[in-house]
Image (cartoon, rainbow, N blue to C red):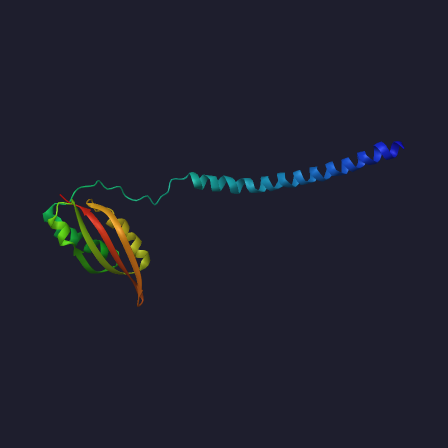
Length: 153
């Protein structure tokens, strides 16, 4: 009776504890293996992002500087290997006292170079916002249509 009441239940409890110990031991081994991976990922997450955009001091555009602005946009497009097809300014925005100038820019070229074009476009001091970007696939290239707002005096 002593065997049935004490020894057999104790052996069962002991075997369950052995299984739990084995499971915990396996988890500890997994954690030891994964620790270096976790630490390297944590270091990468804490690193500062190296692709920060350049900070440009905002300055309103003088009315006489609009032609220079067009030249600057052409220069940026050429620098990134894009073909500038058209730059249009909204005449109504120029005559009104809105404080902003609407420009529409059409360029064609490689999609990956367009990103760099946008980053350089952001360095123009009078750029207030890029409202719209439309991308269309054309033969062996892409066509990009931008709608941008420039701050003006």
